[in-house]
Amino acid sequence: MSITTREQLERLLDHAGAGPLQSRLVGLEKENLRTSPDGTIALTPHPEALGSALTHAAITTDYAEAQLELVTPPCADAATSLAFLDELQRFIQAGIGEELLWAASMPCVVSGDRGIRIASYGNSNDGLMRNIYRRGLGYRYGRTMQVITGVHLNFSMGEDFWQAWHALDGASQSLREFRDQRYMGLVRNQQRLGWLVPYLFGCSPAVCNSFLRDVPAHNLAEWDDTTSYGPHATSLRMSEIGYQNRRSAALRVSYNTLADYVADLEYAIRTPWPEYQKIGVVVDGEYRQLNANILQIENEYYSSMRPKPPAESDLTPAAALREHGIAYVELRSLDLNMFDPLGVSEQQLRFLELFLLYCLLEDSPGIESPEAGEIDANQSASACYGRDPALLLQRRGESVPLRQWASEIFEALIPLARALDSGNRESRYQSTLEALRPCCEQPALTPSGRMLAEMAEGEQGFFSYAMAAAVQYRQHYLDQPLSPQRMADLQQQARDSLAEQSRRESLAEPDFASWLAQRYPPAAQN
Image 1: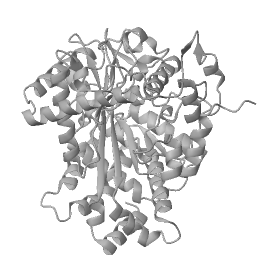
Image 2 (image 1 turned 135 degrees about the horizontal axis):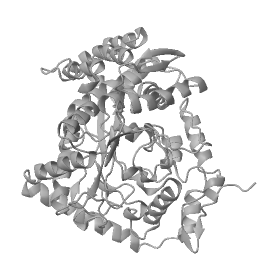
Image 3 (image 1 turned 45 degrees about the vertical axis):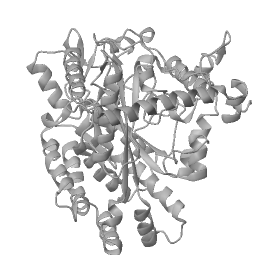
């Protein structure tokens, strides 16, 4: 831990004790592909038993009709968030019949774009916008790339923390200005250090060859006639064959201030791009995309972390950030954990709480072009070659072994773990560091290393390995049914969401083109 961060932590503890550090909220957004019993991506519609994907607060869809997204509320601790997710997953498994929830981030048995049904959200203008936006993603990047799945962690510090820190360091700023500035500092540090997440938790070192049909070129090795892999890869989901770096050459978004971030996003959603103009917007009376701009909407900007405004807002995301500031950050670089039925474990979440708190407290200067290049290179290197013992990363113009840098970060997290464990009988955060630290020196202990070792031991390709996990976890949830009361509660929520969608669709609305132009004004014509 740098002296600046150590002093910052000690000052906070001296000023207000450990209480404000315990004031945190964590939430999860977990994606899962529904597949047929044979492992192909399901072409069935979003099951009515699960409610409306448009209006259900906890069960929706991502890109595809088969791509479930489970959303927990903000919770006071990781265990509560996981318990909520567990109930959702048991409810869903009971509601999808013989279908499976694919256990891996990378899909399999992919038959091209025709085998992927874009998510539908009904006939309201909001529902139509969501569907058309996804059509645009398909035209721009292909549908196959969009059905890669993962886990997003929503993280925020509570009001007690912000008031305590503001009292120490924020005299010249309003509380909101101070909070926004510090959250953007967290985002920048996560960019700098985010290579550690795929190294520690990446679980997609191999991929089904059916996925690679639409990938023009790659340097993966052959595992068998069904599977390709990276011998030292950790997260192909976060590599060039995934979606992380598929960005327009015109897209440059600064994280140096919230104002810069919002301005760059708004520029991108209002600026036409020739490649997308060739696709067309409305062709033969049907929308192909919302517009032909660099980004259709803010969500099209793929990054490993997003600053997020308060959830309850009718404004666009960029406008809500400008109007209301940052309420939380969303970490988006977690693969599904194939070694846990939930796809994410409490140990992972506890480490990430420590990591993000460190990123928040650590000094965080602005990111300029040379460092931005290092950040991109380090993220790619960790995803593609992270388990190579000789791998070097770039840090302020110097080469440093990944293992050395990872060990330094673990050392820096120890005082934070002690602070979060203070007053608790169980040293959960310190135990988490002790359990994960050997991964720094032994890459074979990481999920990606374990996955390839088990595939080799079982003489399995990716499909067979992931399919066996999906079948196992299906039975796991069927063997643990919800209580009758909780099942009835979730069934009622599903019915209520369907009724709410019907209510919205019954309201008088302007025609879609007018409604869209009001929400996202057309680009100015030169």
